[in-house]
Length: 232
Image 1: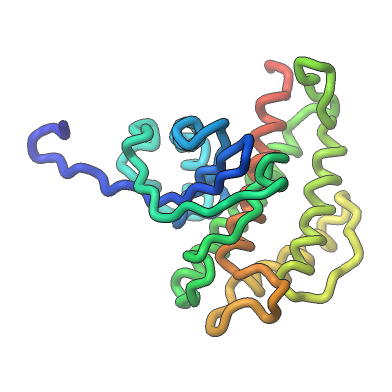
Image 2: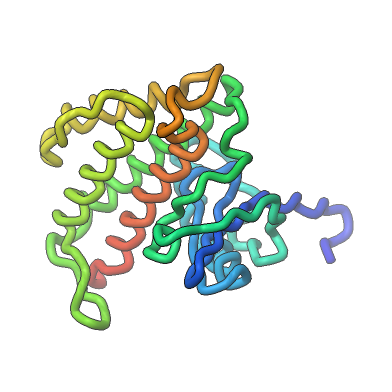
């Protein structure tokens, strides 16, 4: 029960994407805040656990993060507004289904907001990668990419995202070429910030989903680098 005189925070809207082995819980209004678990409750628990980490993304974008404190999230903080069937992509470890709510037209304010959050996710990834050692701790079975390989993987994915937005695919930039990376990202952000009719072709991603997937991928690997970096 909330303390006297204190309003209870509104639940955060999420949708659930369910594969046969894995479920993703994705925050509707916060691109990139998406985590997976072996079932719905586990996925929601993982999402709640990562609230404090996502709060830094919202802060980077200059936005207040709900509720008053990210540390107050738990499974009861979420309102499941849609469930979508997943696929082999879901089970592999990436959110791959487009919910119906991502096909809604984008108002200008919403477009600007998602652009700011995607840019913040990229900024966080760049900052984490720049501050990490080249060699990261291996997983329990001795696997896992080192820092430069993760950066290369994220850049390669960003080129694919350009195509998914219906844009002409650029050559993959050298990760060390800051100008080329920035130019590619500007093209993506311009597309994400467009309003009016939705995706330019049947095969292109809706802009809401594109923002969600792009931010998730950058943050997932930023947090991986943080978790696998040796203690200072």
